[in-house]
Every structure is written in C-alpha cells, then in structure tokens.
Length: 387
Ligand code: GLA
Image (cartoon, rainbow, N blue to C red; front, top):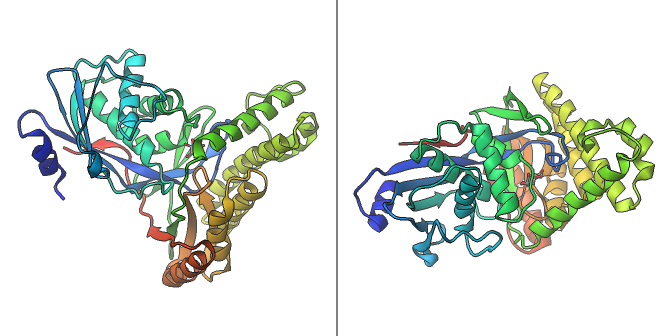
C-alpha cells in the first residue's frame, strides 16, 4: 500500500504533504516501575504508526484511519477539544493537539490526516502512544516548533494520556517511542529521565512476542487503581523514611519499613515496585556482561512478581508464560506492558522457535478457547519524519 496515494485519494493532491512514522514499543524488563520512580528497559520496534499529513487553511481537522475504514473520514476542529470524551480513535491525535496548545505551542491551522498502523490492535505494544507521538512529531515539524526535543515530545505525549485520555500512565511508552534506536534498548531512570542505550545482541536467540488476543476493557481503571495503591504505600512509608519514590528503596530497606503500610494489598503492590526496579538494574548489568541466562531468569522472576504481588497477569498471560517455561530453548519469558491481557515477551533460541510457537500456541488455544498470535521482534529507530 502506498500511503501517500491513499492520502491523496481521500484528501486530494495539492499542497505540502508530509509523511511520519512512530514505532510501537516492547519492554524487556521493569514493569509498573515507571510511575514509581524506578527503572525500565524498553525498546522501540520496527512496526508502528504511519501518518500522512497536510496543513489546511482553516481550523478544521479531518481524520482517516486505514485501521478503522468503517468510520470513514471523521471531521472535527481545533475548537472542539473534549478531554475525557473517549469518543473514538481520533481522541488520541486530538489529545496531542490539545496538549500542544496547553503548553503554549498554539496551532494556527487544521490538518488533513491519514493514519495507518501495523501494530496489532490491543496487542499491548503501545499502539495508542504510537499515535500520540507520531501526531506530536508531525505538529512539531509542520509548525517549526524547533525547541521541542524528543524527550519533551515524550512528556507531551504522557500529558495527553494523563489529562486528555484519562490514563494515569508513566513515561515509559512515550519515551521509548520518541527516543528509540535500532538494535538498542533504553535503560531509563524514570526519576531523572537519564537514559543509557544498551545494545541487544542475543547471538543465537530472538525476542518473540505472544499476543493473548484478550479484549481489554478494564485496563484503564485497574491500571489507575494499581497506581493509587502504590501512592498510598509511598505516603505511609514517607511518614518514617525520607524518600521521593518507591524506586529509592532497596529490597532490604523496603522490608524494614513495610510494616507502616496499612493495607496488605498495598504492601504487595509496593513490594513488586521495589523488587522489579532492583531486578531491572541487575538485569541490565547481566545483559551488558553477555549473561543472557541470568537476564532470562530475572524475566521469569519479574513475571512471578507481576502475577503474585502486582496481580496484573490473568489466566491468558499466565498460560502463555507458564507454557513457554516448559519449552526447550526458552531463556526467559514474562508478560510485558500494562498486563490484564496484551502480550508476553520471550527470549527463545533460534532452533526452537517453531516448536515454541506450536507448543505454546496449541496449549493456549486448548485452555483459553481462542488462538494467540506470535511475532518476532526487530528493534528499530524512534519517531521521525519520513519524507
Ligand atoms: C503501560 C503504561 C506505562 C507503564 C506500563 C507498565 O504501558 O503506559 O507507562 O506503566 O504500562 O510497566
């Protein structure tokens, strides 16, 4: 499919038409740590969202998505922002436009916009953040907002999710999508936004994603609930220890202060946040030392903590991971992203990939009643203008 031609079919030929791309992301380890001042270790992937765009002479906005052709061209305008309306997919780009204006980057004109994403819907590979960031990349470029760095673009994307779309997410997804580099993962300290790029060289193995295909309706409310539980735990710990976030604590320090957390459920949530952060730091060292086996073990431990303490896995993700653990050639396997559905990530030796897909796929379908999808991941560059 030639996206420019598809744009022109719907919106005509004239004017300055530009193309942009923003990837999806997958997180190798460090889950639910990004809103707890901890570390994450994501990478951007080669699939993502394409955007073809042209400025208009009026304040109208016209959106078309090749992923929702049944909705046709959706019309709106720069005077029709509606935070938390959750109307349809156009709320993501509109959230980004609104956010630009909230930050004094005023938009003088509307746009004709054609989107196409090749991230599977609801796969947990951050398709919505990818739409946010590709839109932001376009707005910054089309309006010559030169001062906006890719880190600021990520922060604007997070602001849009938090304040326009009602998801209290951390910075991981937007940061990874805006700043990714081919064949490297980002070791990001979310407390300071210091980022170290680490090459991902897996020699005879690949990163495999298994998408659960579970419909995720409750994600947002459960996600915000987990965040609230962590904040409650932090506030109670702060009555006896001077810390800024759960990410400031080692496992030992946490055990010494956890008695002040009143609700047992909050103890579990905070224990995960602290342990996962420490695990992520250890895992990155292991990867740098080429100790893939250790990295894999930490991935497995991450899943157990997300299953038992954070309780965001569910039968679908647990089945995918627990079946993966039984397969030969599997170095590590865990859920990735927010959880409650979405996907798992496994490091699998090349020689065993076909067998993995067959074994895990069959066991999953037998137990869950529908099929999972499998993809090998390639790590690609972050958001950018294409032409
Ligand atoms: C979602 C959020 C991220 C992060 C992950 C869990 O992807 O958008 O900010 O919290 O969940 O690690």
